Image 1 (cartoon, protein in one colour):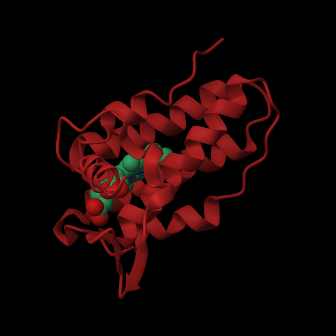
Image 2 (tube, protein in one colour):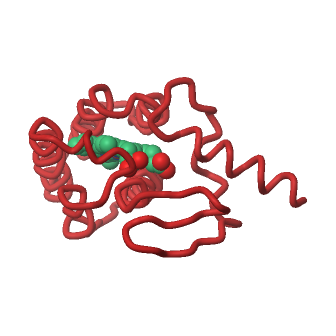
Length: 156
Ligand code: HEC
């Protein structure tokens, strides 16, 4: 069992910004042991930045939102204030946080807010919000692109 946990943590790390990440990505987080230290969290001995943890939350939360929408459930979310920290979170590679990043972050938050307020055709608003995740990821962090694409809903 111990061996599995080590393996899983390697797989999880592989969803970070490298290409060719393993597809089983973020589902196995339950066993993680976390330890907090200024802007960086240790998960099973692997360092995770604040930004990576916010991203991980966003990914997991958007995955449940996707599942609910797919099941035809009428859900309300209220994560905007939490997600705003992408502007200021400490990143693994701080040099990536430039003006282009901030512009794409603002665009994403606008899309996210539009999704929260959308009353009809929520799948389209949801996918447009994911396009804003992807716009930044294609530039800054290609590893999770595939996983994000898999969150998309069929429209209409
Ligand atoms: C403005 C740019 C930007 C936007 C928008 C963005 N990301 Fe990210 N994402 C990043 C960067 C940069 C990292 C690397 C973080 C680090 O390692 O510090 C990252 C990392 C990740 C990771 C890997 C986290 C880990 O454990 O290492 C996932 C998964 C992720 N993002 C999913 C998403 C999803 C889903 C969305 C939209 C709901 C999104 N991202 C929107 C830039 C962005």
